[in-house]
Length: 73
Image 1 (cartoon, rainbow, N blue to C red):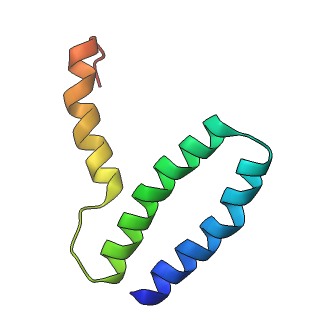
Image 2 (cartoon, helix red, strand yellow):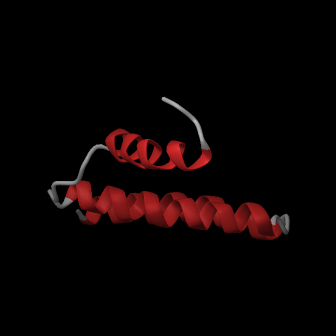
């Protein structure tokens, strides 16, 4: 599991300074948001936690959300 955290940190160390130097604040905020979720997901998978397939989570969300906006699946 430590190697996953190390790789995720290494990739972030490569990406974040270039975004800061170019003053791309909205992109940096989006990157950090997605990166937090990606890191959490990778660490959960690496530690052996049983989590549902993301596709199934999306299907469950949309089967709840579509009727609210009047879309028939």
